[in-house]
Amino acid sequence: MLIFIENTPRSYAWGSTDALPEMLGTLPNGLPQAELWLGTHPGSPAHIAKATPAPHTVIDLVEADPARYGVNGGPLPFLLKVLAIGAPLSLQVHPDLAQAQAGFAAEEAAGVPRDARERNYGDANHKPELLVALSEVSALSGFRSLVAARDDLSRYVHAATQAGDMQGAAALQTVANHICPNATHTRDDDLRRAFLAWVFSPDPAVASALKALASLAARGTHDPDQEPTPRDRALRALIRTNPGDPGVLVALLLHHVLLQPGESIYLGARQLHAYLGGIAVEVMAASDNVLRAGLTEKHIDVAELTRILDPAELEEPRCHPSRLAPGLDAWQPAIDDFQLVRARLCDPEEDTGGQVIPVRYEGEARAVTIHLPQPAVLMVTRGRIRIERADAADHGLEAGEPEARVAEVAAARRGQSLYVSAGAPINLTGHGEVFLATVGGIDLQPPRVS
Image (tube, rainbow, N blue to C red; front, side, top):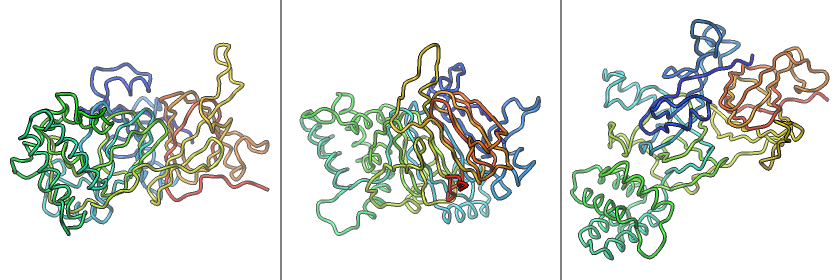
């Protein structure tokens, strides 16, 4: 079944007021609209669009026919989102599966209310996630080398010295010494954990260093001898939105990446990160477990944070898709929860208002076919797409082949989404871009009949 679904964007302070309304074709309501959730997560399950006078969610759909619409008889193990990031999110890390199960069980046994501010684990699941940029996206992702962090601090010490702020220069040098002492036999992993504990301590040097960075940002430079780097600009934005927050210093330890449209990062469990700005599609395991490390007024459990995070250096934050077929790319991390597919389609003969639509992206195809042995959530992010599914009796033939009888057809424009049940392959045509999330570890290429 091809079932249109919809949801109301979730309003968080970091959201954009206009990006999601523009994509969905709705009017802005004056509030920041941050996330559109498309899945069966109980926090905000998607709704069946215009199905009946009474609202029905995708949870209701799965519960009514688990064998047809569920995954192993239950809800989706993944959640597809669209993010509209108007301001930096908190620095955060998600537990791995064993940590989530143990942490959730311990808090349940201790009787910590699930809505309590100090609660760390809202469920017993891990939360790896994959983000693909739709616009330029700025993000902090994973630990970089301590030497690189210290070198940036050295530039800031120099800038403060040049500005005559000797007290600020001394405070920033203290931060550099905590990040990477000149002579030490301590492992980098332990230094990172120790640095996190220090920045959240009452040491007055932390506040002094934050004040010095704010002074540099106010003067418009972190280095009088060169143009500001993307990292410098990102740091200024963090100082503006989170003045005096220790997370600003934590950000110095992390990679800063600028993703162009179509570029992506995969965030495994225990990896410290924060999204700073832009519009993106994101797919994750169906969990809401978050432990924060700054850039927030919410609860920060430093001991638990430093216990569960992975303090190792991440060599490369970006990840790359594999080409499954012309016009069809897939991000397939080595997990069972999800994989993400992008189809880019172009019909050079399509005529809109008397004008033939040109090819916009390298690698577009006139049609793509996707095999779906498990349910999927599909969203159109550009253009208008036709989705066809062959009759179940023709399962094994590619949709569009002469022998295949088309049983279902849906036409979706930018901003519209569908829940696609497991079954015969779907064939996509039209002009635009589609993202499709489904279960990990399955083959998305349909078997061909010889």
